[in-house]
Length: 81
Image: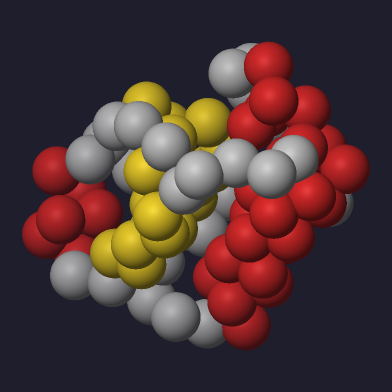
């Protein structure tokens, strides 16, 4: 599973990355995490608000920082937060 964090690297982006990592580890997932900070790449991915989270090239979260528990549901079920 590939998890992408889209954003400038601000505190909210860092919190989203930490929550996503904790959720993936809690579920025992085999994952890689990439942080996308280039504005052009963020726009090309269709992100309208940061921070955003993508899973396997599908945007799941935009403009907020879900809790670890919410992200466990997203990562475990493939749903949206």
